[in-house]
Length: 299
Image (tube, rainbow, N blue to C red; front, side, top):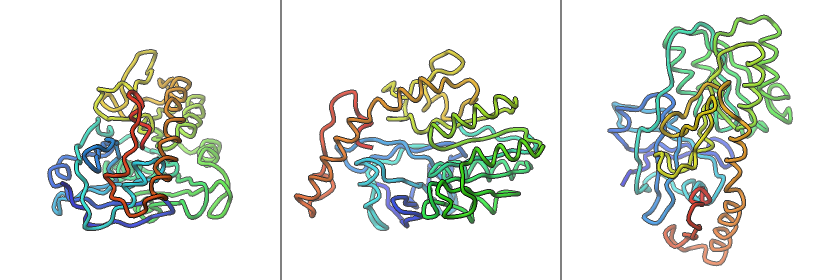
């Protein structure tokens, strides 16, 4: 069992947990993730590590309520326990002194981009960060990103905070202004990473994307995170999660990522129905069976 030391909402539906996990805290590197299981019959879900404190023996994760399992997780608070936390998993980010690096975080992807941005800054890079969200309420980790960036740009889709527009608008401005960019790191929704990749491909700027959204069990066993990289099949969880953006077949990625959409919606609807009928039942009794091969449907 892994104790939750601290829990707080950073934005509506987006919660940060500080979890007691000393062995993971000692080994974790930027870009890696853990797999959580809340209770015995529950789904195992991969979650990126936002930060770690080896001396304190804790790791931070940021979770967005999207499906049944993430909603269950976000109902937990300090003092509660998580059954399993396994990690660190995946290959760490490749950190070196590249020169000027633009780090792009979209939505909750900012929590995944933050440790990489911090490590790139420590390695001597000039770090320009671009953070995007749908609205002001959903902008997360602004102080943290500002602290590890030479410059920080923020966009909101509706213009309720900072500049109205998308992260790609800011990236385009940097390119058009003649800013030297040696590398781009993009983490967030697939559609955002695809747009960034298309823009930097034209400019021949090396770009790395993190394919966390496609992962299911995180160990390479289920095959659900299979992606085409330069025409060859790889697994996002064990071969990544970070890949050369210009080698990713985003068309196949989008298709695979939508495979479980209907099952996810059914699982979430059934979960809400169960909670409405029996609001005091324990987490363990809220389990909804998911057909074999659709294990990502509870997330």
